[in-house]
Amino acid sequence: MRALESGEAFTIARNGVPVGELRPVQRNRFVDTRQLQAKLANAPKVDYKRFRADVDALLDQDPSPRG
Image 1: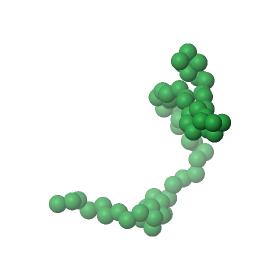
Image 2: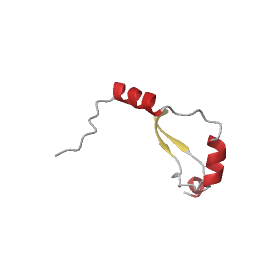
Image 3: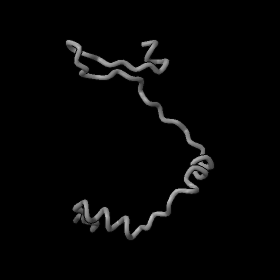
Image 4: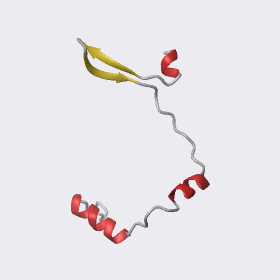
C-alpha cells in the first residue's frame, strides 16, 4: 500500500499471464484558468456547425424535449 501511495503501479498475473492492474487512484488536479487558456491559445478554432454535423452523422440524437 505504501508503494501505491507513492505512485507505483503493479501488474497482476495468473500463471505468468497478466490479468489485471493495481495502480494509484487518480486525484483531481486543480488547473489554473490562465494556464489552461495559455495552453489552448494556439488550438484550432472549432466550427460549431461542422462539429454538430459530424456528431449528428455519427449519433442518432433527437434534441427535442421528451413529453
